[in-house]
Image 1 (tube, rainbow over the protein chains, first blue to last red):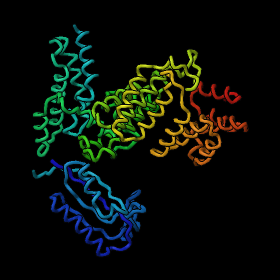
Image 2 (tube, rainbow over the protein chains, first blue to last red):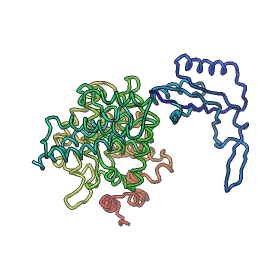
Image 3 (cartoon, each protein chain N blue to C red):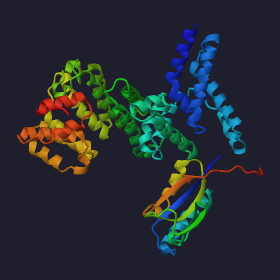
Image 4 (cartoon, chains in turn blue, orange):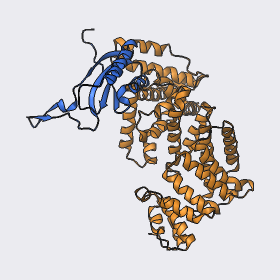
Length: 117
Length: 398
């Protein structure tokens, strides 16, 4: 039984359009994960200035522009993989194009029991 | 009979604690459950052995009993479906005493994994490999017990939830994975070394020797063990009978543990044969130079300078820079020593006691006003050291 991890891709991006070279690198990366049979999901997100954050405080809804974490590195996308252990997940995270000038957060996913099983 | 049975149970537990935890935890990744199961198995042993006699292989008995308890815990937790194969694997588990591979090695690499926050690696190792209680560890770290316990719980949760694997790193991974293990062991050695009640130095020595045994091809592990042996060998000489501080140069080599020094020399020579120098081997070489008086040879200040420079180049740090300045001073290179200290960042040096102590020595040598002495005394935590410095620099203690 393997473990699912989310890989959060953080890089500094202003545009949602990547240069061709980078698109190819991302494409190759996801293809490799697919070929390895470990990919369970993943998306590119629009740059973080497109985000809007919602909170409820003291019964009042607060809507704020921007992401909830205003960090130097912005969340650009994510991938979901299923591998044996953390070291394997880290090895895959290290292959990500954004690892070179950004960072990748690797976090285990809590698996809910399937109520229909 | 009861007393003998109890003694046998405690002996088996102490000698095997780390191995048992490692074997029980490695498949599930759940150290906390392994510790609980082992603790319960031990209670069972203390109940059953006085009645039925001590088993022929106490460790095997404890492992089997603990494994059953772990399995029962899983069943009660209602883990089902995909988790069943794990239970089956555990039940079929490999022999309790696998002579080819000591599971404590995997456990030590888990404790020092980069995913584990640095400050908890040493406490985790002390608790899981040696079975030290959280209370004892907290005392050594001068931390409230609850705070230490919480850190340990969190680390073990992470190991389980993020699935940090129990495995020996591949040879190509060792340059990245071994240093944190060694650093964690060395950090244990320095912890409350002076205070006999809370000192965990002996435990650290045990861990250092263990890693040498488990990784016989690694010269840095040997360097670390040798380093710790040199330092430990000189410990009896550090204080007079009345508790006054005795600096290294004033120590009587007859007060040093000669057999421990010989042991250190042997291990260091063995490390050198691998021709893969490193930080701990260099630090050990420095301590070896300091210990030569035990063998009737004078200390060689110039060689010490060379060794300190090598350390500074290999593994730059505040400590290495200050010790290098100290070595330069002892070899008569006063202006170089002064320059070395001046090059250190003010913010870094501000609270670092040895910086001020060496600076005070430089000032004394040059006949300058010894402005650094007050800070050296203020930052020294040991009253015996304070008294020594005050006498040396002609000040009163605070």
